[in-house]
Amino acid sequence: MADILIVDDEKILANSLGILFRDEGHQVTTVHGIGEAITRLEHLSPDVALLDLRLPDGSGLEVLRAIRLKHPDAQVVMMTAHGDTATAVESVKLGAVDYINKPFELQEILLIVEQALEQQQLRSEVAFLRRRSQSEGLAEMIGECEPMREICSRIHLVAGAGDSAVLITGESGTGKELAAIALHRLSARRDQPFIEVNCAAIPENLLESELFGFEKGAFTDAQSRKKGLFELADGGTLFLDEIGELPLHLQAKLLRFLEKKSFRRLGGTLDISVDARIIAATNRDLRDEVRKGGFREDLFYRLNVIPIHLPALRTRADDILLLAEHFLAHFSSSLGKPLLKLSPEARIAFTRYRWPGNVRELRNIVERLVILSPCSEIDLALLPQEMWDESNLLDDPPPLSSGFDLESHLQQVELRLVKQALVLSGGHKGHAAQRLGMSRHALKRRLYKLGLAEELNDD
Ligand SMILES: Nc1ncnc2c1ncn2[C@@H]1O[C@H](COP(=O)(O)OP(=O)(O)OP(=O)(O)O)[C@@H](O)[C@H]1O
Ligand SMILES: [Mg+2]
Image (cartoon, rainbow, N blue to C red; front, top):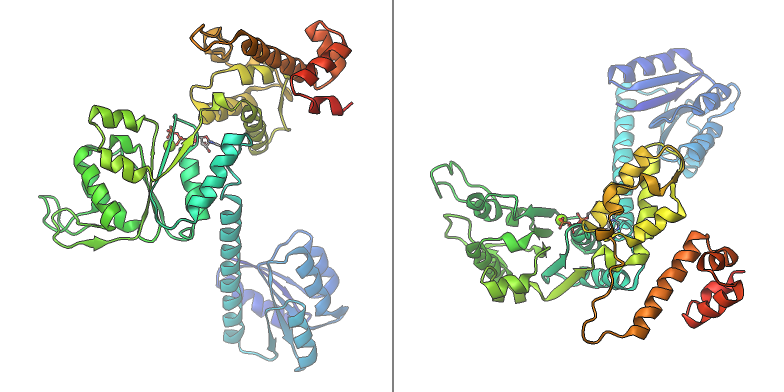
């Protein structure tokens, strides 16, 4: 169903067009002059507009201009009674998709409108895909710390590297799946399928047929041939999540695929060639699995050609607040709340917390806070219990292991406290100095010594 606007002063024609398109299941608005058309366009965004060129209060081109301005996606078809080719051509220059000479058969206009709608559908699909591939490439991966920048540039590099296998490692919730999707979207395979398989979620006895498919009669229930996920990923990317859970005999089959780019369906005798890039992910230590005999060493090396390791969130303190702000904005807007922010104390609690569930946990906590917060600033008191518990915080006393260095340890403590004071006082040096029990002047000297000279510039 589409929205169609008809502008024609010949009431009989306008009305019969109205009936025609309503019968086709469209929503139709009929008006008889420019003024009326312009007023209706305030609230109406037509998919297609049929405009008479000569109207009692002026030229249909005026309506065309107004539509182009307000609803650039609308498809405009001009109708002219006088074979006024020059104006019709001008209207096409102004963005009309077509024109039709009166008198015309209803079938004719029906066809033109149908084509216009198809074109519009196609255009919006293309625009959607283009937006998606641009904005959802890496833009969704938040992180400005050095390791994350490096990961982003590696993802860009690897995306262009054809079909080499990629192994993504990292603790649960660090963004392995997000990285795999970004890699696919940035690669030349972006318009081909991205097929995801969680090796831990599919029962072992089904995994082989899910992955590789089967021939009719391969086993009792195999009534007909079935394609596996490897085949469905042809031309695209196959994301094997939790690869550490892949049983040994399937590891052998995967290795063979990586080497020959072909495999056999269950019960099959034919080698099937497939062009799919393999991205594997795991939160386990695969080297350790190799040592224990649970993971094939040759497969590990074959997958590990291009490793991408996502660091735990607790090791990227600067990204914690960045991500928190990103999710605050996201959930505030999706839940229809004013933009929420963290109080200075809450900000510190965020950076001191250990985040065992990494970015996923942060995202979930922020969502909950946005729902629960009664005012626009999220206060410490609202944070969940686990964020308070000393055992979950990062400031553990350091072990006096070999290589311990008191000087550098003290300097780190100093650095952290000074930074905390600056955050708590919103960057105000006087207040920060007060919190630290020192003079403003002493704080400035300290900042200089700690290499925080950039903090000195802004006041
Ligand atoms: N750098 C990031 N920027 C924005 N969002 C992120 C980032 N990293 C992770 N996320 C978000 O955190 C959540 C968890 O990420 P993802 O599912 O990719 O983690 P994972 O490493 O695959 O976890 P698991 O090992 O548990 O499967 C997702 O909602 C994801 O969008
Ligand atoms: Mg995952």
